Image (spheres, helix red, strand yellow):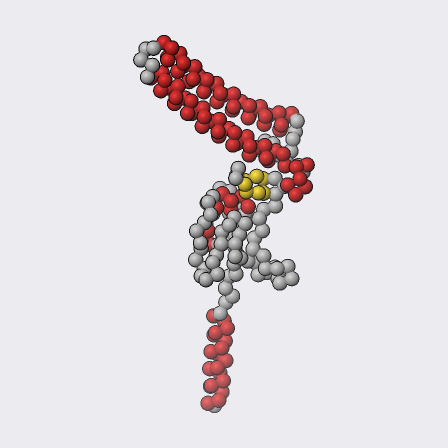
Length: 199
């Protein structure tokens, strides 16, 4: 009887240990946006600049574009153990057809080169956004400069006219820049039907 009790306790003890032990999550060393987990501990390292934008661009299946990525869960580093050793234990792969550049998220499939559908449109959209931001910032600065010239003209007709020219020139330049972007989108998507524009 004593042997049965010892064996039963032994079986229950090892059964409890095996049921309480669970496989820890596995993480890759680094993701495509430069976020790393050091091998010494599981605390995250400092995030690289614009990591949130990069994660929204390259991992839309994990981080939707309307949410702020949370790096504490380390989802972009989490390794899927269901894939199996034959395919390699891979972390989430970046979205096909997206590249995070200095100009932002370029959403295009450049695997086929610039001849693939939507490749040119994606690059042009990024460049247009950048140029429109620069022209808007310059127009705002010229509006401030023209206003300053008008205020400090002290009834000097020459300075007053020059200030008005600068002020109205900035407004005309801003209208011209915004209308050129609108016309380019209209021509490319509505008339020429270039893939990727207007989407």
